[in-house]
Length: 168
Image (cartoon, rainbow, N blue to C red; front, side, top):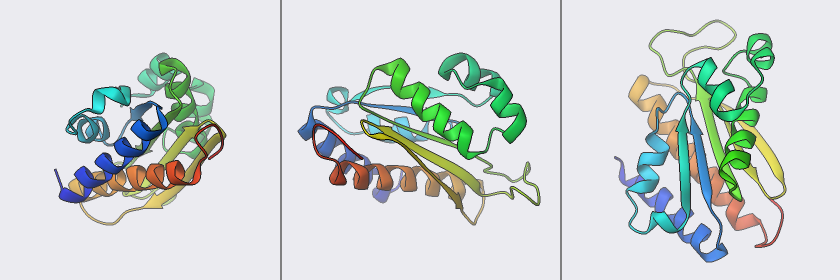
């Protein structure tokens, strides 16, 4: 685990603990790496509720409530699915915050429209849900690591911007 990832997870945890809020994760392409990074932090049991690894489309639908019609129409690697994953994780875990990632880590699976390295990230919080698409270069491990770091970095930014009782 990279020092950067550990540092980001610790910063997120400090902010959540200060706020008295909890986090849930919903991961596809990172296979639980974000939850693993978070649970490496001593005391994470005071701010991390749970995580889902929903690698298959069926798991996204069954575990997080993502509409299979949305997956069929837009693909698992899409803004709509990332947002639905984050919203589903937040709702089902009953947490203030959730983050979700879905992407193509490679080396196969890419297309002209969605090349390897395409990742959708989403963050659900008290004021709503936001999402961003990233195209990370590199091999599978590099893409997964960049996805984990980017998701935690943006969550930390959102936590810093949000007032304790409201918005993102």
